[in-house]
Image (tube, rainbow, N blue to C red; front, side):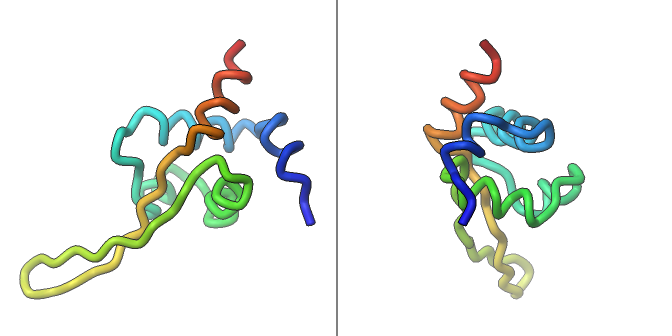
Length: 87
C-alpha cells in the first residue's frame, strides 16, 4: 500500500499541474477535460486516493438523452500540498 503522506509531500510535476488546474476552477473539472489536458486516468485516481482531490459522478440531461460525467475537485489537502510546493 502506498504511503499517501509521502505522495502528498513530494508532488510529481503532472500532479502539481493537475492540482493547479483544479484549484483554478471553482467547480472543479470533468474527467474528460482532465484527459484532454493529457492527464491519465491513473493520475486522477492517485490524486483521489491520496486525498488531494475528490471525484463524483453527475448526471446531465440534454436533447432527451442522459449522460453521466465525473467531476473532479481539489480538496483542502490538495490546496495545502500546492501551497507547500509554491514556497
